Length: 207
Image (cartoon, rainbow, N blue to C red; front, top):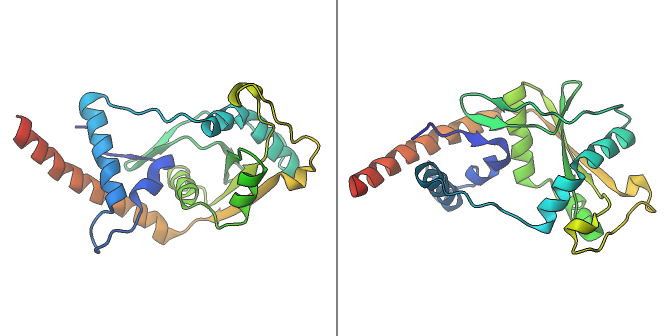
């Protein structure tokens, strides 16, 4: 079994609080079992939805939109994947010592829901993972309300181009936090301990 490393986009799945101190949460253990089965059998469940499809389809346009509305100038999508001893990941944009991560809301309601609540913890942990990988000390999660292409919406395109840009964009800023950075590393190490024990159990049953 290869050594466990967490993808930045999945850090939130292991960071949940357990009922007892020093233990892993139920959600974390479920995630680790799925990870183990993937290594052993090649199981990998592809999560597909119209929301993910829109995000993928509009990512380049969202980066251009962020560049325009923030005044950061031309932004290029990052294609470089990072990896260290604990984390892997590919940030959307790296610019001026800062990480930008775009999120394309499905519609006006989901956009407003996102900006009127606190930053989604999964997205915060994702940015923190990218910080750990890149050494950058600042990041922002950029919510964009982009036009919905017809091919991801059952043939029905939706346009928001008549809405002012400032009503279609919102950003959450995330600053480096040494304590939270250390918490990620400690949780990965705890996950590795659990996986070693689980591997021993599976080996005793099957081999």
